[in-house]
Image 1 (tube, rainbow, N blue to C red):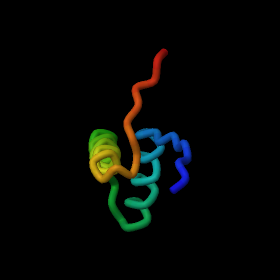
Image 2 (image 1 turned 90 degrees about the vertical axis):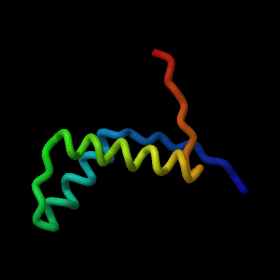
Image 3 (image 1 turned 180 degrees about the horizontal axis):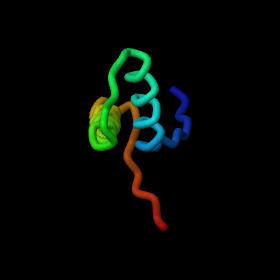
Amino acid sequence: MREIEVFIDTEEIADFFFQELLKRGYVPSEEELEELADITFEYLVEKCIIDEEIEDL
């Protein structure tokens, strides 16, 4: 299997959830969105869909 490099930003995940939840009639708080994004990221790591790499600044 070929490996590809993908960058996943939790802010982008939060924005996606916000838009999708609005379409479904929900208005989540910013804190709720951040939690959902973090949970989603952790799920992807746990399922080995992505590897978490800490970026050197």
